[in-house]
Length: 436
Image 1 (tube, helix red, strand yellow):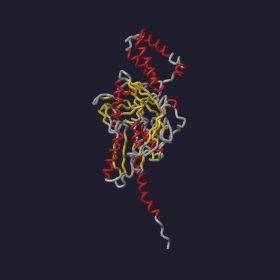
Image 2 (cartoon, rainbow, N blue to C red; image 1 turned 90 degrees about the vertical axis):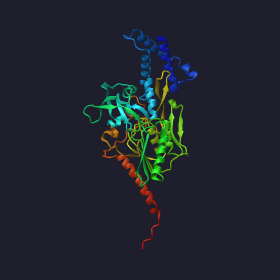
Image 3 (cartoon, helix red, strand yellow; image 1 turned 180 degrees about the vertical axis):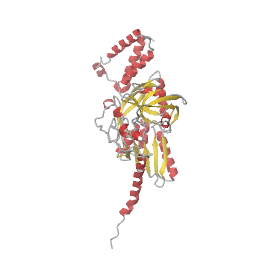
Image 4 (cartoon, rainbow, N blue to C red; image 1 turned 45 degrees about the horizontal axis):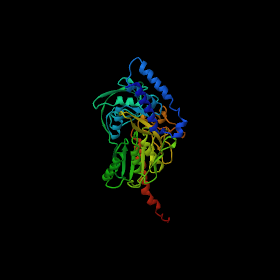
């Protein structure tokens, strides 16, 4: 391909990204900013020098990808350029089936950091925990490694091996783990009856995927069948749920809300504001409900927790959530590559921005494992280049760590207390006989 063509394509790509991101402008604005893209002349000049004078030939596609990658890297931590193979891998994950390790990652202070391992994944089975820093992949340092490139290196065919050097608070030096990649087939919803006598059900949503709402409905119906009656208390467990599809989060929240706003999103300069509302049809009965969250609860999980908290539908229990209050969309480019672009911020029904702050539980209950204490795990506020939130405050620290699942046990105790108070209410309302 001729270098003039490469420059033309790169210029077109830059303009296309600006348009898709909502940066289009009207005729008057164009006139006012007619010199706005003059720096592209400098870019074109630099590209010509590289093509003609660099000591070794560089593939034109690599120059194009590097230019877009560099441009995306100047935005926020969640906006990224993705090569074709990474786009495919990301789309596979939303279906719940892919080959790899099953680890949700972010970049914290230039370090590749685990948000949470997926349930029953090679990462979880190997003992990887939220907050772990992956310092090497197969011996290669990860510092300054782009997130999408790290994900590409961690993916691979089932049965192949990858060695990770893990650093964790309390470690004197990184520890090496060799993991066997597997076909990760995640069921996004798990459930069990944890107190049959009182009709209490525990439902865990591990990630918001294509059919999460449908799986949740089936779980609740199956629980009713096992109980041979109605659910009288629910623990909705969103701990270590890194998020996923926003539309599925909306549907999950809608299942417990009969009316009102679930979430609103606002783009640049508050343009393209969208509001998602609850519908009465299909709403669950108003049984007592507790939502468990922790620092691994991010994005779509925070949408659900924030909606149920603002409407007073559930008690939010656990530790401070991650604090990712931005919305991304994947935009396919013509060669199969793509960009994941932040296009909006989301707000709870009371118009609280969760960005950087997260959801503060109604009842703070510490994590169970010392390595998972809330104050030690990375959050949105720790990510380089994250959006600021003027309302953000330092979350309350967690306390000690009991040996068992303290959060789930506390949630169950709360729901049992509700049943006790309900049972006691008629007795309190009965007239008391006059003393003889």
